[in-house]
Structures are given as C-alpha cells and as structure tokens.
Length: 151
Picture 1: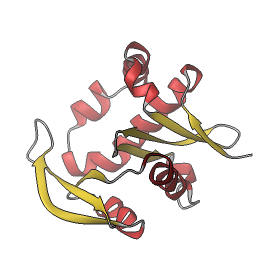
Picture 2: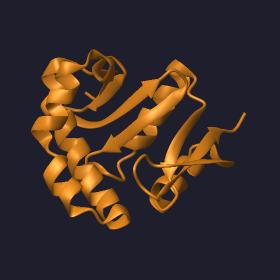
Picture 3: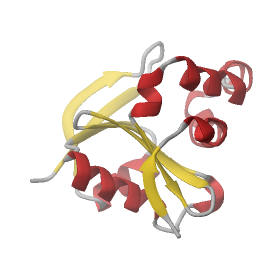
Picture 4: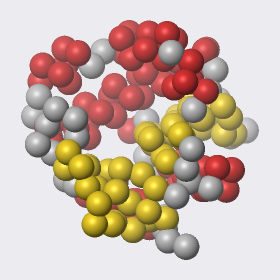
C-alpha cells in the first residue's frame, strides 16, 4: 500500500540514488557540466551528506509503494526539492507529494530553473505561478525563478 512518510536512515541510499539520477537526467542538458554530473555528484557522497546532517532527513518525506519511488524536501513553507524516480514518472507520484506538502505544511513557494520547462509546467498545473522574482543558481549563470501558490 502506498504511503507518504517521513524519511528514515534506511531510505538514504534510495533517496541518494533518485537524486543523483534525476539531477543527471534533468540538469546535465541545462548546465552541460560533466565534471559535476559524473564527478562530484555521486550516490555515496549524497548519501553521506544525508547521514552527516540531520536536517535534510528531517525535512524529507518519501512516497513508498513497496519501496521509495519519490521524495519531497520541505523547509517551512518552501518546497526545497521534489523528485520522482524516472521509472515511475507520469504515475501521479509527484502530484501526490506536492498535494501532501500543501495540505500538511501549507507550502507557499519554490524555486525552479528557468530552463526546466517540464518542472514549470508541472508546478503550474498544481496551482503555482511564476513571479517576477529570480536569482542565479549559485556558481552559475542559470536563473532560478520563484513560483508561488495561488491563493
């Protein structure tokens, strides 16, 4: 039976696997940085980051249906990250995670890469609108756009 629950230490390797693969798949075409995508971005280092710092684990919720298929990280009223394993996209998992965050935490906003049109379309379908606020992704020339939930 599917459930959304707070992440536990036992989920860390699966969370890291989803994050690394999703970031490579979605961001490599935008950033075109092989050294980061295949050098710095490794499952073990991401997993160790989660284990060394309790905040990411406490802020992370997972969608589990026999095993973890997606995750959302929530900090206050902000969606920090939302990823679904690419093998399970288009099954409504991302929408369920986002609905959960809205209902349980009253999330109001998030940041999305300007060039990530799939993410912008997804969040728009779920009640978020682009604002005129933006900032650069740290260390890059790529812009992050702020999206806020319609009232």
